[in-house]
Length: 223
Image (cartoon, rainbow, N blue to C red; front, side, top):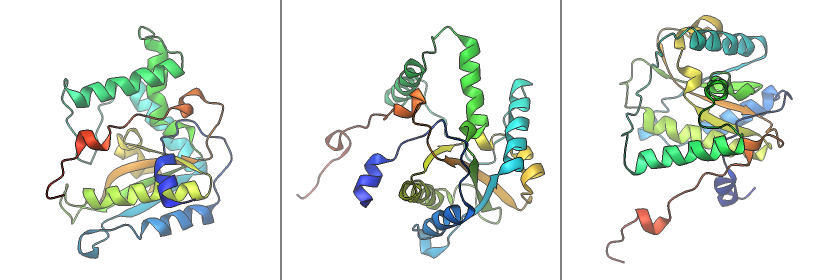
């Protein structure tokens, strides 16, 4: 797939088939991700891939904590989005599009709660990539570089007909990941990527979120 084609084809997948992703394929994707740019070649990313019984246990424990009302405890910097303005409008529009595709009415709290749980189950993906950073690094310092690795993973996955969803719900209970995925305290848990073969029949997977035009967000100087 041409690189520009891949960039435009990439989208968040929120339901996967049960087909497992071969370990060698995941390894090839991560090998591509190591070529992402980083400041002074510091490469401030590490990965843990979870699948099989480990992933199923993490999914179960995440949902149990969510249903029990356990406070979220992310180890990464959480962006504080404003409650009004363009950023909020974009969030609301995305939510409306998803719930319309899924036929979830605004007033249906049960279905909305069930939808929320899906993120804590990695959207039922057969594998998840957990992205870590060493605690020797500042909390915010490696995030830009890690973002380039996340994007590279998502693009490389398309080469293997895989879908992805970058999602922080999968790391909101880091104590679960530490216990069942053996993540040491010396590593900060940054983000997760659900990865697998897309379920083509799932309505939300048809969504292609909108983007602002280049002219709306770009100023030109000297040309």
